[in-house]
Figure 1 (tube, rainbow, N blue to C red):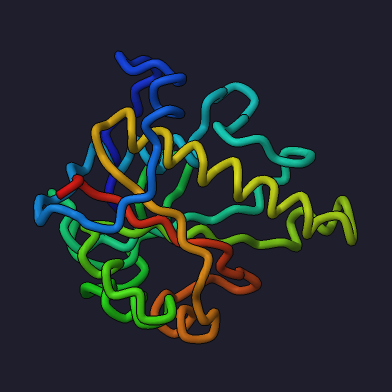
Figure 2 (figure 1 turned 135 degrees about the vertical axis):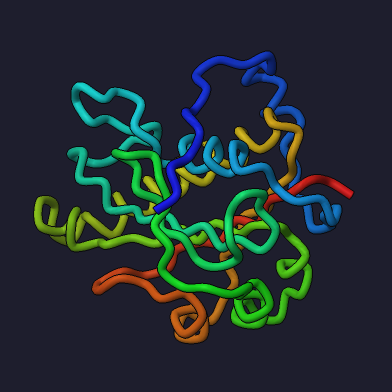
Length: 198
């Protein structure tokens, strides 16, 4: 387990500025990502924002929270290369696979080689059954809405940190599942590449 630095809940960049500056970035500097920045990005996407009620930063239908985030670390200071599952209640990472898997993920993402240059990738997966147990067939739509909200939170947080990021939806799910050891019943919805602009 890797305990992440406490997330910050204030900053110096206005949300309007992050909206105006957000652009997809596909060229990353070789500089590593700071562990605190990785933690801040994960918190922005799915972190606990109200400990008393367990509420998170992204809205969730019925507070079912089906999303599961995996940080694929290649060059993250203080974190070994590998796949790490984000655990929001404790704001920590649990290692699930060792080794640098960015190239395998780039191949699974329809050979988008630039993904392997990002110091970290965030794989947004979901356990749709968490939401389906309450909402039935409507769960598919609700899970997609939540994934979009979480991804946008992460993208805007990247801008506020002086980083760049890109949301990727083109991938071969079977190939991606071979690279990222997902939990039972989980499916991948998106990948976000993040790092310092070149």
